[in-house]
Length: 74
Image (tube, rainbow, N blue to C red; front, side, top):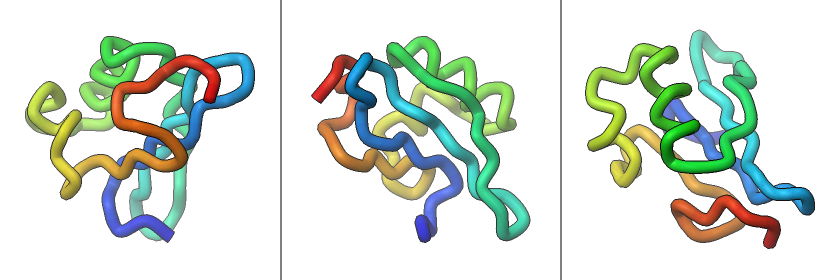
């Protein structure tokens, strides 16, 4: 289980990455991001105070199964 509030999961075979938020002991799917812009929208909706800074902050986001900012199929 992630200790960070936002997890960006591995790229899917068709591209894009599932994004989840850990809140009150549960994971909530925020959507599938296909770009940094999509992820910024999800972070903003989730109430992250400074989404652009959070993109590369491991205290906010855990990138799993691929490089950070990699959106195409693995």
